[in-house]
Image (cartoon, rainbow, N blue to C red; front, side):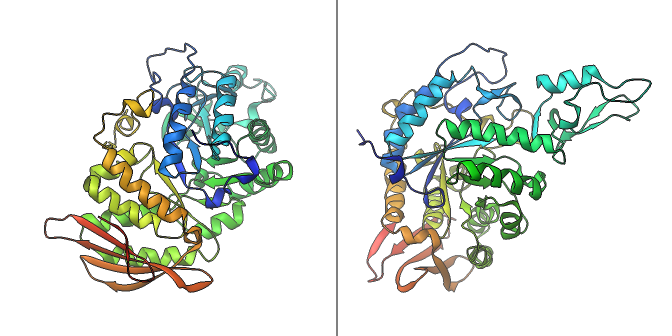
Length: 431
């Protein structure tokens, strides 16, 4: 059993290695059948914390856990644990267990939009406008982005074309107050950070104000913004978040291997290095919105992708199941995310064993990184690049005599390989 540690001994957010879990899926909750029975499924994750700590991860990054209509990103109540996952007492037990394992815990904050069944929104639409004065009858009306002059009646603005997801009006001061209240409520219950879902869709000045307010009371809170593409450092600067999701690197890693074109990865690593001058981006090769890396590259290819992540500057995350070589293809259709959000067994001891070798290989990579904490801020230079081979060196930011060398290759069958060497040229890891 992992020994208890003081919260002050836990790794800061930027230096964490996160185990990213989608709770509704991992805990086997019913997603769409309407079953709202309260079941303490969230406690199941406590059974997995030894496993996550032995893997080498130092933080638990949770997908949505608040009461929602279906998949978690359609929130119904921001101050209530989804009954399909349990109660606030179950959540408190998970927080306590994470901290006892020396692990931070980060929650997914879906503050871009709400469910179309969100009760305050329904009340606003039902209250409507005074037909004579045109005054909105509900004081909560300014919270939501609604076109009251639409020909077909009040028309809520939807998030990215999804009619079940309605946008907050982020220009309204009350929305800032509300999001601050929610964040501080859960910070008071012991969480260490927030993933800001669809952060790219919200004005940066909104995030800047909210993050500054929350830090005034909880100065160590870590903020991760979901940003797909664009000027990552500018977003961090303007929004006052700590970091953003490095989707450019995610894409370059797998497509460089599938297309046998390491020039793409080389170009992206140069850009990644520029980012590292001002931010420490969150790096990953899989999450709840992407096809499993083992489906893209095979189990061994997935480990090569993880080797790249673990030898670059950044704040890495491992999506639950990737350490076992789970497969799953995200499809552009209704329910197309289900395959990449599967249930876990009740405890690691119930895994069938097929992924044990993958787990051991990835664990050795994570611990390689843990023994070299300077890799969070490593400076990477290209040694050699060709279509099917690539070598780079990642150095400590203040000591170019401290480094790892990484040699990547793709054989004629399309299989990727990786070799990691220390300063003396000794093999640290190989696949």
